[in-house]
Picture (spheres, rainbow, N blue to C red):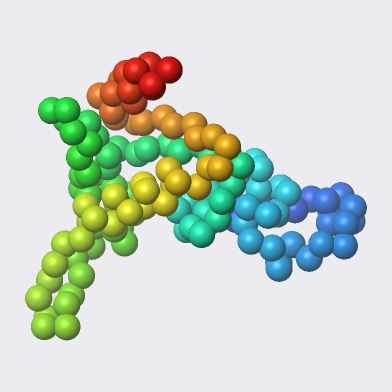
Length: 132
């Protein structure tokens, strides 16, 4: 699937309305129904339904959800931060947790989840069955 902001509105979409697509946020643009968004494109938005693909940086081990910054492709989440004192600190686990929280809380009417990590996917399935 194309990533957010890769697709452009078709000429028929542009001609069918007087909407200026450049003034709309990503989820408000009709053609983005065929794109995958990110925590950046849905932050602060409430959508009817959200599908979340939980990547390899979120795992389930020994009965707990764990965050693995080394498995993330988001370099901004795993790079060290230089503090005012010059000290370098890691915030990868906290940032990954925050990203997941943003994505999981955007769907008003529903949430679809798939985890890349098989153990996490199985734990989600078990949790859903318990909640039925």
